[in-house]
Length: 634
Image 1: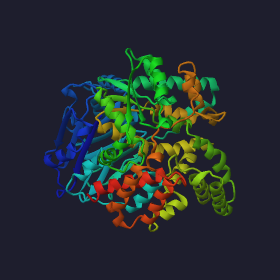
Image 2: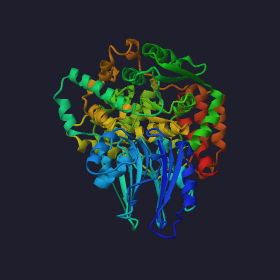
Image 3: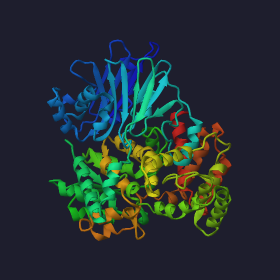
Image 4: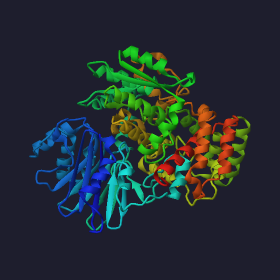
């Protein structure tokens, strides 16, 4: 796992030299503390920078930037390619000579063979940049699921790129500014959907996007993978439920085995839930020694403490188990660290315990960690998925002219019945949209969003979601609602909120996180499963529970779903919430005339008084205020 950055200057006016690319590169030292390298072409048209966290082939042969034998093609690469050994054998048969055992070199030779199509053969997570001196082209690409990030920006006469925005901002041609339209998206989703970011003029590749920049500055890009596979769908349609459960177990085990590829110690973040426990159980079957496991809980909040379940799993499989507690007193300092490392604001407060857990892993010498991200989205583990399917979908069958007034009425009735603001506003918004589902973590919506903004922003945040809903309808005949919901999550929330958080927080501690539930074959398989395999008898992830029955203790399999808990609702009602309110009001973001701070104060007051749970709304504002002060106004 590494950090990459670079400059492509097709005009001589763009600075492209060793000094500036080194400055860009070394903002990413946390991503690669083991080695650093750079390359500047003789004409100063291209500069590449790399920071290395050594995982595979720990020798100096893995140094990057890496070049071909004739030094016409150069690569910087971040990630892991799990099929690199098989690719190497194939490429050696074609006459390629290898100087290392790294996956980076396999990509380099594969690019020499097939060009931009090389990414279609790669099995793993990656962000990469290849300078092709023969064609005078720069090639950028991001992995299928968007596990690894890649940002870019154009300046007059050139293009910059980096694993994190901070590397791009180090170039003297880049000015820091806020994209106000993207701010509207951030309030809604807690992240900014690609290609935009909150930084004006800075963009990001989407998952499975590749981009080529030619010598005249022309940019072309496309998406090279779609999670809907018609052949997989046909195979699933012809199988029994029992056969599909067996196939799911096999795919999971294969994925976990692949992600155990490492020349350094590895372990698992263990919450005690089904996903992380499955990781531990299947890894224990494959590992010769004890698996290292890591658990965390907030001090003094038993409702969020899953350590008992984690200990049950640790004892069952004989793991080398580590635990730690998160104190409320750590939150302010942790947020400051997060606002540096995450570049964009951390609207997902799960980053708080994950930050502490990552450092615990690093302190034990564990460099690679397997995590459970993706399982709930693929197999519908959250209650909200089934609720949307039951209520919002039938609502869409009502004639459009009647939907808006009925949505408003239903929303008010829901609030009066005690179902809360979130449910009421979801119904209201369903009446105004062509689709019933916008994602698993909507922060500001409906009347609450209207009130918190001081003025309307010229941005309809839901257009991106509607586009993905329509894409799913085209990609697979007879696509069901569960599949559409998962597709939206794969395009938006999963890569840009959950995986972005995991990448930044793990790399801040210089450890590599791997996500076995996001193997692309497993994703294609789960996306093709019928709804009864995902949600049955009021329980999500039904097929996965069946696959692990007899392997995991029943008490773990039958546990109700519990998210990676943080008592933010309680913390925002106490001293931390008071400090957060002061920080939001004092932030220089208040000078932008974007937020109605009287309404912000009312939200804090309503939350403290128990008139609803507005913790997500308040954390969203606290995070973006800290981000603005650090990156824009600082």
